[in-house]
Image 1 (cartoon, one colour):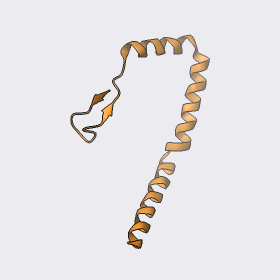
Image 2 (tube, helix red, strand yellow; image 1 turned 60 degrees about the vertical axis):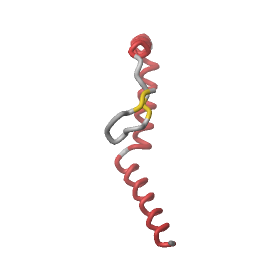
Image 3 (cartoon, rainbow, N blue to C red; image 1 turned 180 degrees about the horizontal axis):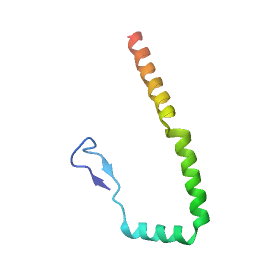
Image 4 (cartoon, one colour; image 1 turned 120 degrees about the vertical axis):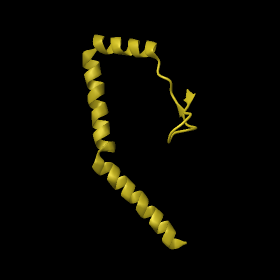
Length: 74
């Protein structure tokens, strides 16, 4: 982990990528294309279910509504 020194994420911790680990993983993908395809499809499905503009917009709108409701009660 390394600390971000500047920008909007200053002070946060980010993972440092490992080139050696990436090399191992990429070789595994090349040796196991069916497994990679299954994982890729699962990842895509997850992104579509959780992070499409419509899903994110609904989440943000709900959060704003909660904030407004809290403000009205005070």
